[in-house]
Image 1 (cartoon, rainbow, N blue to C red):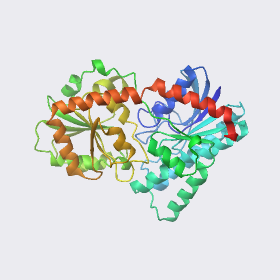
Image 2 (image 1 turned 180 degrees about the vertical axis):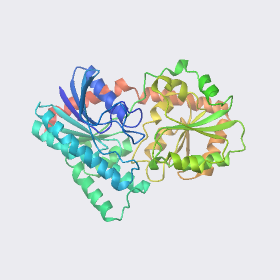
Image 3 (image 1 turned 120 degrees about the vertical axis):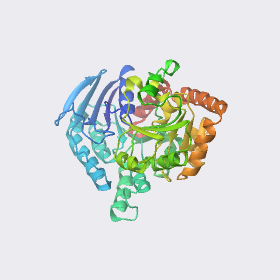
Image 4 (image 1 turned 90 degrees about the vertical axis):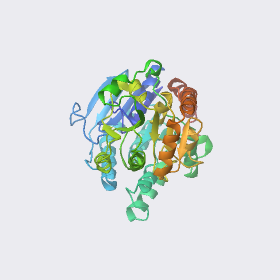
Length: 410
């Protein structure tokens, strides 16, 4: 089958949505399908253009997949309105290549939100190709913007954005998302159950955690034999990382513990300011993929904070590799949310926004090595059972074949 994928994020972006779009495209190509990807120029998570990608449009073939990257606006400080401009610019830039690719008559057009504003472009391409449109929702962008304060819900812009989201979602013939709760949100927004599908993000099976060795990191960063509470990933509003700084304040007298935050994003400098004077916290850049198993094994516990109200709007992609590392997770999630369900049984859920409870959860785990080991083993087993890349793409391929045959009459 011929598959056209339209998605803002793609490799070489190391975190976020990019690795999953890349892995899906290459996985389908390995299964014998002809895959074309239209993506933006890489910029995430630094929100800066990558130096080895020039300003113009560029097409390459990567693992058999044709990848065209188009230029777009990248805001230095991604506020609400600037993010909208960012997504509008990608939609405008990808329109020409998408309509041209539609002339090759793909059997399916697959598009990813973010960026929701590029969905109308994908819909036009699907219509021209007489192919169904599959929308995959990684984040509910508008509601996440409300939850993080990037966009005031009661503002005129907020109301317009919500109405536009409803209209845009209805352009798709089928839709998927990454957790059961997010799939239910799709149904609440008008999709029938038979039009929805859970397409999980997967853990990276290339990371060899069985032979991982964190000794070099401990030496490089002067950690010694201290226990490590680790956060790695994007540093932006929806993570609510201020709670980690407050937990570090509360645990500053523990000489056996250090907090490590690795990542880049618009909130990093503010977090460093909040942590000024703390001796039990370190900031580092994202680590190279080649060292990822050793790096993630540095954690005694992984930290996964999320702001109140965002737990069913996004499911952090970083969770999959945290679990695969065989270390317990301390998350901030309320009962009944998707994140709570994913962490329960292989980590500890503390109340969103409650730094005191998060600090207590971290300390209690570190003081109970047997429980840490039990939860870590459960985490690794869950990653194997629920987040195997090959089984996820195999199941997605079967659903894809069914939906293509159903087409617009489904």
